[in-house]
Image (cartoon, helix red, strand yellow):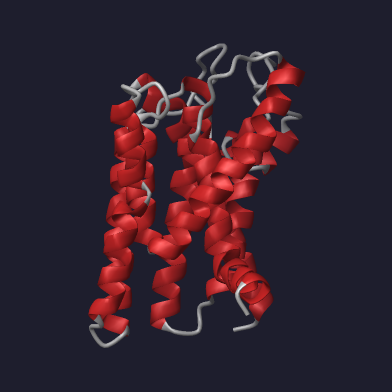
Length: 263
């Protein structure tokens, strides 16, 4: 199958999943059912028809307004849908689809990216990382380790690498949590880095944490000045960006660092 056909299918599927992510972003903090309850306009409560919920395109055709009451629809909806589709394409670009193993790994990382998008938006808005999302990431991490374990001929080194990753950053953050009585770091961030460590392995999770810290150090002061917000920050979005960047460019960054400073 031609590459552009595969990427097209992945993009469309990612956009469709992105529509579901919007449902999760709204309903999880409100503790609403994310499956059975029908979608409706947030302003007039009108139940939406199927043709009002076509990802990205419905927003464009409706000019960003509800068909019934003409109230503005949040730009978040098409952004999340398009972002998820693009991320899926990037995952398959970096990890491929030429074997069952690569398809499985790409699928697991797509699920990871989707979960991190939901986690980031919710944490950004509420300063809370839902436990369910971290549990989901933990399950994806276990599936990833098992897949790599059997693909490598049952190498225990793979399991050890990812097991160390589970504790590499989360244990450090746990010590900070108890030493500051929860003032410096949140419990959700600790669980996130534990799940990410199991998924990535110790080298990439350390890198992802460092990237997240750098991004938070750069971006949050700018937001404080521009948006006049307080010093408290939602760390989850920055950690999530670090995890995604480590997924895409981690090995290259580590190789560049070693060759630059140690060779």
